[in-house]
Image (cartoon, rainbow, N blue to C red):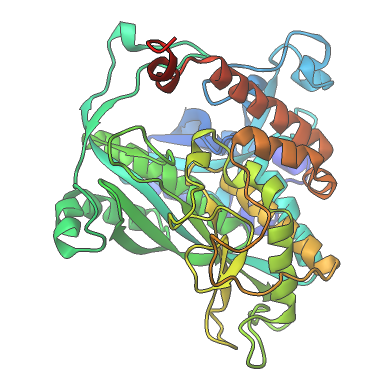
Length: 480
């Protein structure tokens, strides 16, 4: 028996999909298959197998070092893996031992920009068949299951801002390289547009050469592309995807982000989902997450009201949960130090935990006329670098608490930057403290996972705090 059969990992749909993948590999003359998983930061990591090994790799998994789960964003391992229990009290991780990537065959794609290359998204397991508790896709699936037990499915639509620059110098000289804990020099780039001509056709046409390639390849990936738009700032763009159910929106975001970066780099561009690049006049980018719940019994939108109110009572309780846990959930929706540069008043980004009817200054924007099937909540708090599995899991779990305790969201805020309300964290450290103190979020996300996540992000924060910034040099070097 294969590893998958022995441990009952696949359902019937996945087993059928595996046979289809094998047939597609032969029919489309695929030479290699990339097996990837989303790490704690939402970055794809994995291995590539030749086509002849793909069937065995799908059914028996592919080993990879467990330290990939123990690194901060500089690739620095922040746990003492060669001590007892690998620094986490888990013998399975001691000594940089292997874990298994097990493919989900329903995620198979052929990569349009990489000839004869297939791609599969994986989940992580120990050698004895137990799921690895730090697999963020699994954690999101658990949140979906909790919501399903309450009678609802999670529906999400993606609205993602990011930047595309012309790559001028990739900085690949030996002296430009870095070390774990000290990344190498970032690439030198120039603008594709000057910006501040929001949604003008002229600026769109300047981006059309790269937009056309992105559109073609993203659609070949079967991603539910909806719009490509010129955003507010220089070289800033926005892409929206049609709403999906369950795992799909998070899987789409993982593939979308990686695909955009790869396609652009091959064509001489640099795409970045960093929230606020350190370039003159460049704007912050956000990731607005549109969400609603589908009633599993009726198939209807559980957020749509039956009267004159915009939101159903269930939607109001769910919304109240988002607001109540906003500070703790920021550790997942805005997981980088840089992302907190975006929370500024009067900036089209939120700075406090409030909601409003079709108001772009609030944290959660309620949309759709009363009773409409399109009624939804748009959470504007996230940054595009967020791990989608953690971002969406935190949303679901926050909403479930609001539903369970019948929380009330308060009145709609018409003046979002003047309304009295809890402020969003002003730094990653403040968000981590809020997560540490939120007992419900700790319990719902899992204490073992939250403590692990806090340690990784704290290590990243400590490295930042030890750096002498340009601001400090300008401020103090001459005056004192």
